[in-house]
Length: 197
Ligand code: HEM
Ligand code: HEM
Image (cartoon, rainbow, N blue to C red):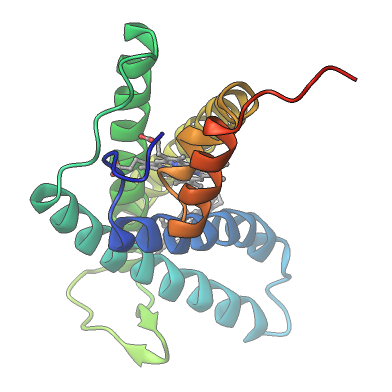
């Protein structure tokens, strides 16, 4: 890949890695926090509030990311990739976006209808909901099922990137790395093969 070839913008790259790091932490925390005993009170609620606050942050970042993406079209995948792989990548990216919007929305609605006030970064949010077991359970189920979809999509995504990185000396990965990575990939691709030892 030459340095002049289309690539993700710096903003898209920054958003990708910040969201990726937050999402991995959020998924792990989402499971761990439920192991905290309900007694003595406080610790478990604090852990849930941290999860809710980070979830809201991911939602806000995803809104910015979607807006940015609509205005800055991502670089087309290289024509050298088989057509089915380009299509699979597009579908998986769409799935990742959909899951990253569904998770915080379902989590928030589930919390609103649990009857407890939703606290984000220590601030109590307006309590416009009421206690409703049916809605709460439905939203918890959506949250849980979507978390499996999300983790599967991330697994496929990372496996595909690693597979390509091994095959193309990092050219595809460089599209989502800061400029130095791109130059390195270019150097690696343009380097002449060394004499066999
Ligand atoms: C929680 C983890 C992750 C999530 C949610 C995620 C999500 C996404 C999404 C949605 C896109 C499409 C961007 C767009 O078109 O707007 C993307 C692209 C990309 N991601 Fe990730 N990602 C994650 C982790 C990773 C990791 C660990 C790697 C590296 C091993 C990686 C490498 C890439 C690359 C190279 C692209 C660009 C693919 C291309 O050239 O079109 N991602 N990611
Ligand atoms: C992208 C954002 C989010 C991710 C990746 C995420 C991930 C998870 C995961 C993996 C679990 C454990 C599986 C489960 O029981 O569902 C969980 C549980 C939970 N999450 Fe989230 N979450 C996110 C956002 C939120 C938000 C914004 C809220 C509330 C405002 C929230 C509230 C909860 C609650 C209350 C639970 C405990 C189980 C339940 O009552 O449904 N989550 N989350």
